[in-house]
Length: 163
Image (cartoon, rainbow, N blue to C red; front, top):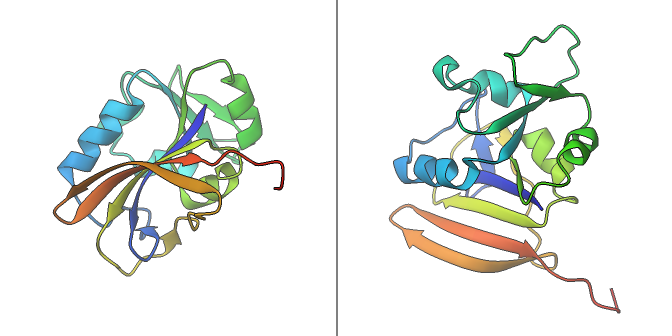
């Protein structure tokens, strides 16, 4: 299964200047709990936005998408130039997590079967945005509301014979 994990503001903003716009410890814990032991796929900007001491993310198989042939990553970190190749290489895993950034999320939306979204109840000024979560495609299957944010899981709706 391909899953997307992201913290998304009410205005769909996910960051500015290659950085998060909020610090929500509960979201970081949820991210860690949901991704530990799994493959995480990220773009090179997301990779370089991680604090150096957390690269690669521990207890996960780290995969970086890059078009830069000179990029060098630590041993054990896989790199691909195409999302489809990265996904195919991990197709036998129970759940592969897409963790950003904006271009990777947009490319992964048609492939994903689940979204783990932290809805951050703010509308900050940012420069990168998450795709619209279309209610015709996605069904909310779990919700946990907190002060200032909500953890929401969406599953892709099954296609009917009509469409």
